[in-house]
Every structure is written in structure tokens, then in C-alpha cells.
Image (cartoon, rainbow, N blue to C red; front, top):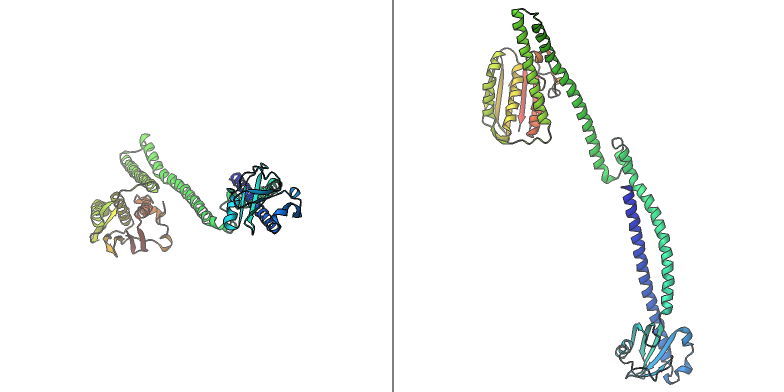
Amino acid sequence: MKKRINVKFRLISAVAVIVTGICAMIIFYDILKEQIFEDLSANAKVIAMMNPELLVEELPVNTDKDGLRITLIEEDGTVIYDSLGGEDVMENHGNREEIIQAKVYGEGRAMRTSTISNEHTFYYAIQTEKGSILRIAKDSSSIYTLTVQMAGMMVLISIGVLLICVSLAKRLTKSLMAPIEKMADNIVRIEEDSVYEEMRPFVSTIKAQHVDILQHAKMRQEFTANVSHELKTPLTAISGYAELIANGMTTGEDTIRFASEIHRSSERLQHLINDIIKLSELDDSDLQLEFEEVDLQKEANACVANMRVHAERNDVSISVKGSSAKLQANKMLIEELLYNLCSNAVRYNKNGGSVTIITGIENGHAVLVVKDTGIGIPKDAQERVFERFYRVDKSRSKSTGGTGLGLAIVKHIVAQHEAQIFLESEVGKGTEIKVVF
């Protein structure tokens, strides 16, 4: 990039110098041309005051030395005098451009190749008081010589300017690239004030993304460690009990008990794996969800029907209140959301406790509330309950089959539906979780 910028600066400098040189030569040539016509005009006006019949004797200058040619022409175009001689054999000049202009406007000018000298010549003509036309001509060899000299000087100057521009381009490129190269070395530690103002949002975004990447990496590392630990516990139990049974070290009653423990651990392992798979799916940034019309009250009733046996086993009553609340959502994720919220409400409840699901519309938004009379969540733990594998009561969670991922899944589902979740809880009195879609 640095090399490309430097090359472009040099190219721009070269083009600028060349264009400037050409424009300067054109302007110089135009100024010189006007100066020559002004000199010819001044000479013509002086000579016109002389007696045309005594023109040769009265001329105060050597016209050959000054490169001037004087011609006197009658109104009909007949040449009556020419300082180069040969006026007797000269053709009629009435159709010459400068002669025509002089007859109409009193004076005229033209540039063309002379038929006499065969050189590019400047012509200036003026009409005298007697009606004849006095024409002064000057060959352009001198102006071309001067132009060539000027062009040589311009080339030398242009080369000098170009070398200066190349040097400045190199320094300017280095100066422009310095903050960018500094960013490339360590964009995270660079101060935003030390880079270009236009790049500060970019730097800020990159730094924020870097922090997010580090946080995600840390979370993934912790998640991997937690998964390994959580999987190890039921697998160790299954392996230990199975080994005892396989070695014939158990009696009939022990075999039944150990088999029951193996079954319970395998169920916990299955729930854990299912929750991990669900979280992985929800973590997928390319996940495309299909939305349809879902009635929260209808889904709540279906959840209660499925959870009733589990609730009765834990001596907890579960019911639905409120009204119909329809919204566009993913049906399977709403079922998962209800199951996790209700499962937690039953699992962390008291004997004889209750779970109430409330659905309805508030301020135009579908609302779902799951309220229980359980053990509650301490204030210092309420912000962390949605973290993966975080448990308020670890011993109770494991004894009741909790994986520690339920509310983490709930948080992801809420985010997928661009909803908001609110939690209110008091230790010993219960918990209320509210989702506003």
C-alpha cells in the first residue's frame, strides 16, 4: 500500500509538472505573439507618417537587420513597393487576409508562410490617409529560436521541480502511513487520538471487537472446562456402578439400586448433552429461524400438560392464567423457553408450592410470566443465573437433575426473538421471570 501511494504521488507530480510546463509554453507563446504584433503596429504607425514615395530614403532603420519587411499596396491590391524588392513581379495582394481586414477595419493581422521568404511570417497591415495599405511583416525564426530556448529552460526547471516533488512524495507517504503502520503493529493498545479522525470509529470498532473476541474466547474456554467437568460426574458414576455389577460384587438389592443410579446418571447425561447441542445451535450466527403465529396461552397449556406428572412428583401445583397472546415466533423455541422456565420453577420449589404461568398483552406486546413460590434467588446471584452452568444451589440442582444450562438457553431464545427478560426474586418467597416480546 505504501509503495502504491508513493507511486501515485509521483505520477500526479509528473503529470502536474508536464501540464504546467505545456500551459506555461502556450501562454508564453501567446504573450510573445501579441508583443510582436504590438511592435509591428507601432512600426507601421510610424512608417505610415512618412511619404510612401520616398519610403526607402526616409526609413531610419535597417529593415534587413531588424528582420522587417515593408510592403506598400494600392487599394486594388497592386504592390507598389516591397523592401525585399521585386514588386514589379509580385502578384496582386488584394485577397490577403490582413489586407482585407485593413480595408474594412483600418488595420489587420495574420500569420502564414510567406511565398517570398518561405518562412512562417507575422503580418500587420494599416490603411494610410491616402487609402493605400502599409504592411509590416516579420519572420518567426527569431520567435521560434526564443521559444526553443524557453522550452529548454522549462524542461530543466520541470526536471528540478519533479525531483523535489518525488522527494516530497516520499516524505508525505511516510508521514501519511505512519499512523496506519502504528495501528498495524498493535491496534488494541493504540490511542484513538493518535490516528486520523476519520479512522477513529474504525479503530474503536476493531478494539471493541477484539475485546469481544477475547471475552468469547474466555467464555468458550470456561464453557469447555465446565462441560468436561459436568460430563465427567455422571460418566464416573455410570462407569463405577457398571464395574461393580460386571465384577459380581453386588447382591440382588444392590444391583437394582446401582442400576437405578446408572439410569439416573445416564438421564442426566442425556439432558446435559441435549442442552449443550441446543446452546450450540442457538450460538450459530447463521441460524435461520422460521417464524409463525404462536399463541403463548395455548403453548403454556400444552407445557402444563407435559409438566404435570413432574410437578406432582415434586408436590408442586402448576396452572395457567391470563388471556390469549399471539405473536410471530419460532414455535419450537417458544416450547423450549416454556419448558426450561417451568422446569426450573418446579425443580427449585418447596413441597406444597405452586407455579403459575400468566400470558397476555401489555402495551401492545405479548407477555409471558412464570411465577413460583420456591426457594428464591439471592440478590448477589440474580445477575449470574443466566450464565452457563451457574447454579445458586449446586447440591440441589444436581440432585434434581438440573444441568445448569436452562436459563442460558432461555436467554438465547429471548435474544433470538428480540425480546426482553426481567427477573424478580426474594429468598424464601419465590421468583418471577417476565418475558416481553
